[in-house]
Image 1: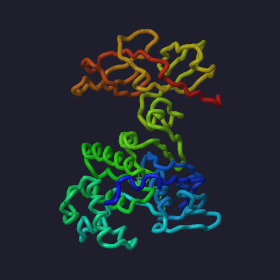
Image 2: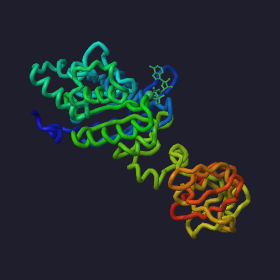
Image 3: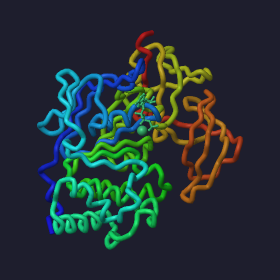
Length: 362
Ligand SMILES: Nc1ncnc2c1ncn2[C@@H]1O[C@H](COP(=O)(O)OP(=O)(O)OP(=O)(O)O)[C@@H](O)[C@H]1O
Ligand SMILES: [Mg+2]
């Protein structure tokens, strides 16, 4: 039996440089660049229609870009300028799709063996590799089943086994878990992350689910309208979103318009807050980002924010309370105590966690 860690060391970086894709008049990708280190998992996170699948297809060789180049390891696989184009079967990439894409008339083992047959591996080697791959994805002994007799989660495990069986150095995922229910998604994403680490594969994982991206990725790349807004480790993205758009997209807290008057921050509701020296950088107006972690419920008081509770739901370890701030913004916050509907709630601000995004043009 081949050693499980065989693929380590052969992991390969992926370098995407200035990739553009235009369909007719529409620029779907706008000279986008992204480097994925050998053995790294990058999650590509963004709303529907932002160009995630388009980028994945370009890396896989299922489409040709309008501009830019992609290297996989030392090899240039596409270059719009010089016309270099390596077809998908020459790129050594595993792929897992949302809809599993299994062949229903073939057994699980035959499905998984397919990439090995394409490479002309002998039968006994194939069987050993298929058995190993099924073991790695937790499907020991399921080889003779027909895909249609398996649950959705098991079918996606078969697709995963097929994607890794030939040990490609790079694996691409396109929303692989979005057809599964929440509990299954949460457990499978952990299994996939562990498997990628164990095999040392380089992975690009497309999703529109923040939780999934944070759970699997070494770094998360946020794609919006064909452009990357920020690429960072999950912890850094949450602690330091680079723009208001990133903070908004990640639903990290509230964003309030404000202007600066004599060192005070005056919000739309006319409420005045006094941030510490230096927080406002002397700019006259901008947006205040307050992550949930910066807000603590308290009695309504000067120098804090004021809100009204809209709903409160028991969550086992406390209450999830929806607050409507004076400024109109809505915010879900955890509270250890029950808060009655309509109750006035004050919020104190931990300024070291807050951020000020000035309107620099003013
Ligand atoms: N072959 C094509 N011809 C024309 N337009 C296309 C083509 N492929 C994609 N598009 C358009 O490009 C945009 C991005 O599509 P893409 O499938 O990459 O989005 P996505 O981020 O994967 O979205 P989702 O989360 O819904 O899967 C969409 O507006 C889509 O309609
Ligand atoms: Mg898509």
